[in-house]
Length: 125
Length: 394
Image 1 (cartoon, chains in turn green, cyan):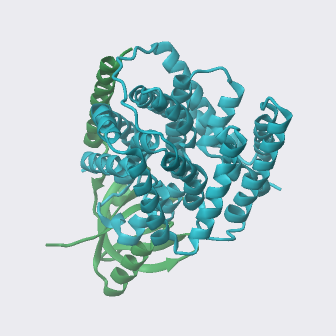
Image 2 (tube, chains in turn brown, green):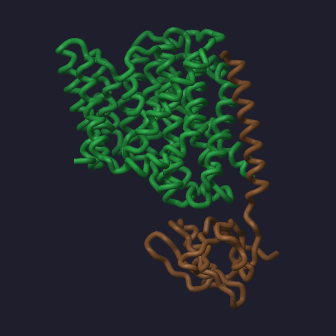
Image 3 (cartoon, chains in turn yellow, cyan):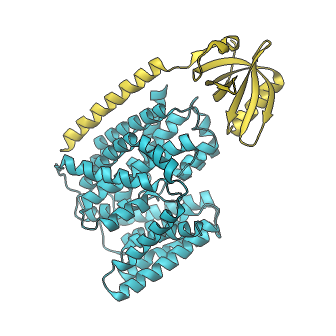
C-alpha cells in the first residue's frame, strides 16, 4: 500500500461515513409532538416538544419538572444539568415562558416521562 | 448542521494541533473561559471532531518540535529517530496509517468494550500488577548494573515528583501540562540550543507498506487500548509502553503504527465510556462531560459516525498538507525555533497556571535531564504518571 492508495481508501471511507450520516439524519430526526399527543407515542421515541415548566425541583445530579400544555403535563427529567441549563430552567419556570425540549419518551413504573437531552429557548415568533 | 460542526471541529483541531505544547485539557479550560461551549446548538459534534483532529495533527508538532502531550509521549522517540535520518515524512505517514486503521478497529470493538467494561471494571489487582510489571521491566532490560541503579533512582525521583504533584497537588491544582513540558519538552529544546543540531532536509519517499502488517500492528494497538481503557488512570502512553516492552524487536515504523493506533483507540474508547457509563478517561472529556456538553443527547450511533467522519476528514486534511508543513518548518533555524518555543511555553504556563508554576517547571526540567545525563532510555520518565497510579490503589 502506498500513499496514493491510502488516500483513496480514506476518501472511500469518508463517502461511506457521509452516507451513514445522511441516512441517519433522514430517518432518525426527532418528531415534533404536542404534549397532549405524547401518550400515543411508542416508548423510546425521540421527540421535540414545547411547553411551560411547572414544579421544578433540583436534586444532586438531576432536575425534575413537569412540561405542560394548558392543563396537560408530562414529567421530564434532565440528568447532570449544566449551570446554563439550570439557570435557563429557573428563569423560564419563574416567568412561565415556553421552552423547547428534545428528549426520549419513556415510561417509568407505567408512568410516562421524558428523558431530556436538550433544552432551548422557544421563540413563538 | 452536524456536518458543519464536524468540519469546523476538524479545522479548529488541525490549527490547534500544529501549535506545540498545547494540551487538549488546556484547550478545554480555555473554551470554558471564553464560553465557546455556547457556540453550537449541539456542541457534542464539534468537541468530538476537535479532539480527534487535534490528536492526529499533533504528530507534526511532536515530530518537528519534540513537544509531546501525555497521550502521545511515546511517539516522540521513534519520530525523532526518523527525523535524524531525514525520514520524518515517512514517520508522519505511518502515524496516519496507524491512526486510521486503529480508529476503524476501535469503532468495530465498541460492543466488546461494553461487555468488558461491565465484566472487568474495578478489578484493581490486575491494574496494580501491570504497572509494577512495567516498572520492573524498565530496570531489568538495562544491560549494566550501573545503569539499572540509575534507572531505579530516576524512577524514584520522577515518581516522587508525580506523587507530590498529581496525588497531593503540592505545587499546583493542575500540574500535568507544566510537568510534561518540563520533563519531556524542555530538555529536548535546551539540548537543541546548546548542541550543533540543525533541521536536516527531510527526504521525499514513496513508502510501500505491507497492508497486512499495517493492519496487524494497528489491531494490536486497539486491543491494548481496549484493555487499558478499563483501567482508571491508565493512559494510552502506558498501553503503548507495555507493548513496547513485551514486543521488543520491532522497527520504528511498527512502533509508530502501534502507538498511533493505541492513542486514537483510547480517545474513541474514552468517548464511548463517557457516553455509556459516565466514566471519562481523559481530562478533556471529563470537563465537557461535567458541563453536560456530551452525554445523553448523543446516541452510540451518532458518536460512532461523528468519530468516523472526524477521523477520515482529519487524516485526509493532514495527508494533503503534512509534506508541505514539514518542509516549511524545516527551513527555519532549529536554535531560533527552540528559543521561541521555550519563551512561548513559559508565557503560556505563566498565563494558565500563574507565576508559581515556574519553580515546578524548572524542577521538572532538571529531572527531565537525568536520563540524558545517565545515558538511559527517556521512556522511564513515564514513571511520573505510573507511581501515583499505583498509590491510587493502595
